[in-house]
Image (cartoon, rainbow, N blue to C red; front, side):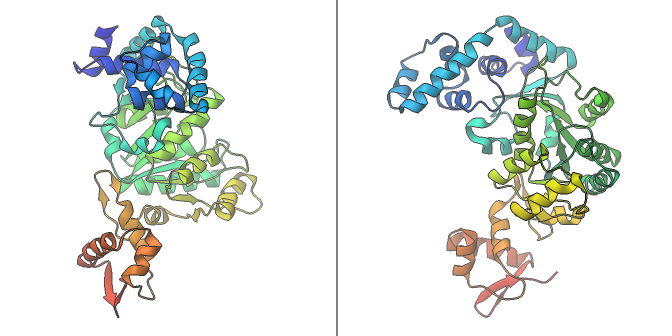
Length: 387
């Protein structure tokens, strides 16, 4: 089994990789107790304790002695979830399945690990199984486009127009490969030779939905298909909901193109909002049930009305002249520009108050933005430069 891990990890240190492979079998996606234990103890030590309760140097006892009753109960309950899944064959099957389909194991700390997922904290993925080229996730901006499975012709058209325009200009389209809006977004991105990635709710060796077998194959060849579940894992309703947090976390912005009142896409939108990611929604006919969820986002969740790719670029901060960094759009630049008005000038202290940044940081960004011609001083204050 160690040899199989070495094949996947190209000769790198395998202990952590093997431990995280085992964790991907033991823990369901988004298991915050497992995530917290791994963050505190490391994958190997946490696995040792999860399986048989043993530990080195009393690390777990020291941790639990200082924890409150709720934490101790959560860890004990976690072990009751994990122990029934302890099976060496399951780990071996996961590794063999990955090798058979050419999947690789991507771990936190790897050069190509998408650090945007770390914003999920203890609920971040323990590892990712990848078919395709994970380097495509380094592209910015990354836009999550999601929506109804039972989409209308209008929804498919809008999704394709927005995704194709964005992908043609270098953006990465992130979605879940479902029927409807997801599929339209992926196809449009591929159609213009752009980048796209799909997060699955089952193993990357299982095409789901089956009708998208060819589409998923093309995404794996030209982009990447990803899952935190090991090969062989079946998609379930819970896993779809857990998968949605990864789509939202990877995106610099999330756009819901078409969604019913109780659509699963609203779950993705909720994750985006909780992570502080910009959220957009495409309006539809007021009589259309398939747009009711989008109208709900616009009315109740402060989503931005999106009608074109230009609106999405503005949502990502690009239309305002915000320059992406290696990790994505600089959030402080977005906050400074959002705080500024185009009609009246604001003093630095007021910009700092509105943006939540220190006066020193605001001045630093204003100086750079002035050099780029995006802002200019007026009467002791600052305002955006008209486009």
